[in-house]
Image 1 (spheres, rainbow, N blue to C red):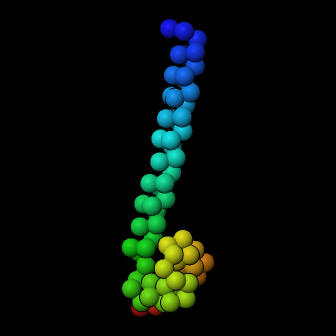
Image 2 (image 1 turned 180 degrees about the vertical axis):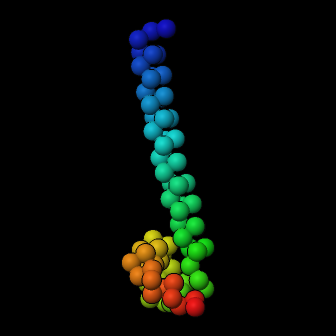
Image 3 (image 1 turned 60 degrees about the vertical axis):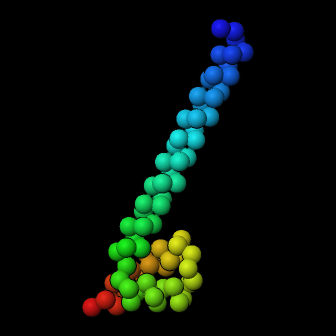
Amino acid sequence: MTSTTARKQVAIFIAGFAAFFIALGIVGKMDYQEAVINSISCEAYAEIVEKVGNDTDDIISEYNMHRDYYDSLSY
């Protein structure tokens, strides 16, 4: 095994390792978003979407900033 081949293998391993952790981060964020969206009542979700639009990040941000208010809508 030459030095060049070993360096290529190490570079590929590092790139694959980094890609794996990036994929884990993306999947983790998607799971978090799904869990938060599913915990919001229908009334609160409708009001938030009317206020901020359909962007999931904006919906979650708005809900987290005013969680007490939106949770009180379902009672």
